[in-house]
Length: 516
Image (cartoon, rainbow, N blue to C red; front, side):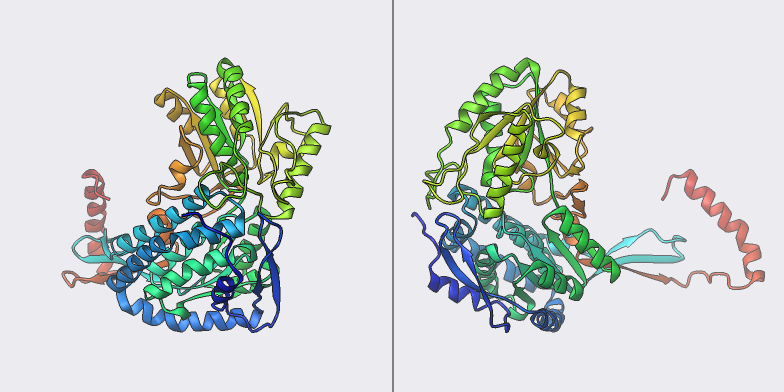
């Protein structure tokens, strides 16, 4: 069934769950129409402090309830996410302007992550024995304790999936959460949270606050025992420094200028079809989407022709069904950045192969997916993330040139390789400076792999989400060791004297038998 814009009544019901005593609201605009979607209550710094206190109290009981209880609750929430998927799709589209299909990616990812951590948390965090300093005489085990209250600061571009990818492993590990939702994505966050509350997550355990990042995001960082941030590299540095002042950890997924290498053994038509989605899903407003295509000369003419033709043929519109290929930009600021980058590039000699113009007859933030050639280092879009529907295409001759061009960036979030030879693709993948590499897919192969870590290299961030690594960031490991009583450890010089030789012989024996 086709969906529709979220109504003011539904929005009012959802936003009642925001902790807000400020008495102020801000209008949130629907990207498809440019009209007010709803008025969002804003939180204050005291609201954040109170939210953290409530979450901290609720966390004690949640931790004590144990993994089996948390598993049951999260599995029920998984089922509710799927039951309520139409409303979640409507919320995501209403706030972001993306297509129905690209909104579905978010719902799929949210359910996938929830199931993974519901079923896997207990085994990942199971206490286990470790090698002791002196075998038999000493024993050692490691267990895990939740950090306490996790601060989660989420962006507007993927409000549902990027929220769930941080919040749910935090809850599965036994923590509480204070989440600062971006104003433009708050309804998607609140709609998904409602499913978890209805499944049995205590309301106080997962608190949502809203407001300016400089004020409310800072307050969340100041009250949390660990911070997750997704957003720009500039803001991520500020979050990291603030967390470091308090000696609390942080995971940061930041910007990217992601490259796609197209090797000369590909089928150009198939590669072009796959590249279009890699570049223009969610209108390029995705941290892992492709902004640079590096194609080898042997296939360049055929690939570029097919790519431009397919980009030009994309169906663009505001449909709440599966009839469109591309949607709208989300914010006026993203439209301005997109137009500025294209104008700057053209003024300095770049060529527009297709696109390059706004589409106000469709809606205020619609823009043609744009392909640029002849992009050079002095152009703003060469190295700076556009985060919009713009991709540059450049031509190289060799695999080595392709690797150098792909790595020529301060960022290292995602990269992709299209190739017929898997051996060749893997060799190139091993040389790329990025947190994830996709072979014959733009980003979804790695993004959907919830059992594998996701994160950035260089200026694209710190830490990892997804996989065991995405859960272990929310716990403190603790070593519990004991003396078995078989032998007393030396305490005085007289006791050390006869044992020094024995202990040295033990070290030599362990090394000889290659025992750690």
